[in-house]
Image (cartoon, rainbow, N blue to C red; front, side, top):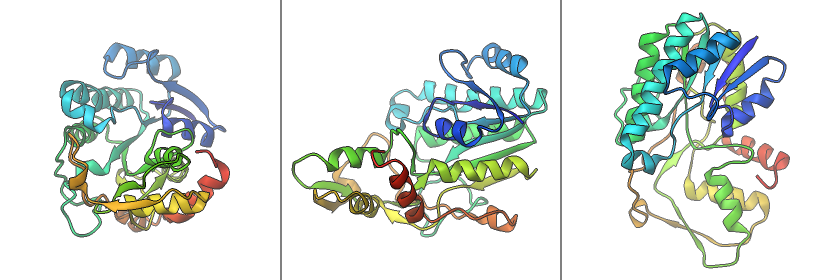
Length: 281
């Protein structure tokens, strides 16, 4: 299959390039291809003529999105619309990555795919606008929401913890009142490979199974790597940020279950595998 990956130089894009090596791949990323410029992305499609597109390109710096809202919407909303239009015109199947930030985080249970979005940040609102553009412009689509992502080379929370864990200093304060699903790019890549082969359309949650707070996730990382620097739980209120973080980022994989697709692996299993294969991150 001929597959085009937008944002192919990023953390998930790099994992996908390795996971899909048996296919013919093209990478659409800056500076060569700009999804916010219609002529640029149309030229990439016309030259490569993909059968499928995995749309990873996004502005994901959550706090920067708050201060640069126009850029966030330009990339996450208009850029996604451009990709959706190209896929429809070129009859390419579209798998587009989205985020738990489309939800408010206020629910007391994991969010499933049919729960109503309610973003509280510019990042979440711009990603939701991108989802809506894809639904409007490209019927043959999958929107794949994930969360708390880490993968080879980073950047991610895991890589920050590995770096800080080997440094001497005071105990590390890590937030213990936000809960989610730590998720490896390898797990997401495998699920996307499955969705490429099966013509389902719609929205799927692709985070790992199981849940943890950031503090519990940090503890698991330190334990697996034998890091001795103390980790201390703290509250979100002790670390105010420009963009509010969801208290609840848990995603239920209801659509995978109802479509009889393979379940996502447990986050602890994925973490152990990742640190065996990439002990330095």
